[in-house]
Picture 1: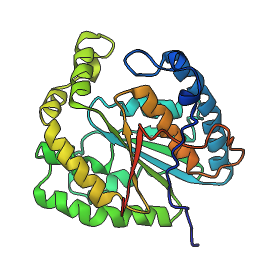
Picture 2 (picture 1 turned 30 degrees about the horizontal axis):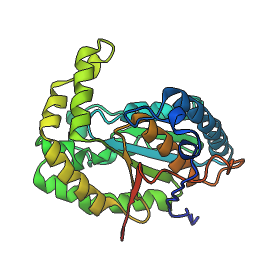
Picture 3 (picture 1 turned 60 degrees about the vertical axis):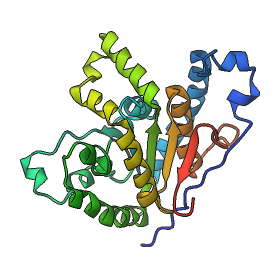
Length: 277
């Protein structure tokens, strides 16, 4: 059976609620959005996500969403934004631990592919096979040859997934060096967040310039027409979350979509990386 998934596209809008409502009700003095505005807009999007899941289940669709990004960029909280009201039996988050000795002897993609969605299911990857494009390269967890071999295979793999009908999205949450430093400090000082800190976080912060180089290489080599990278400015986590949901919903033609809610994304927050961009 031949599938014809529509190529992902990006539609920018200047009539989003954050630009049509009174600025003082939307933005704080530091430029981030107000919590009250965020909660109201998030809830409107949650109703659409529930419609999407019903359509996915009723039509045996498969949705795979990958989240990558700088450490502390908010990958887990963005996944939570998507998952808030979804039926957990048909929507799950995957955060694989480091590979064990058996997995180290397998084809690199093998343990990830065990987690791809079944019919009627939505799966969110909190980091993915793109570990080999970034963190593994930074810390020497893979060889240079393995890193380059990854790029020889990844685009073909993703094209096969899309060709087989998987609705496949790749998000990258980007933050500045300063934002990352502030979030690490916040985790140090907040007992409720201290569990998120590890020695690797500090080392990753020191390696920020190297991550930037590898990020841009990843966009260039694996941002394709069939699987583009959607980059989100996540210096304001809440704005990033809203626009991630908007982007995904705008690129799936599910039943009952409210076009008065889903009609575009914020140009200040979202950028698409694909061949020719």
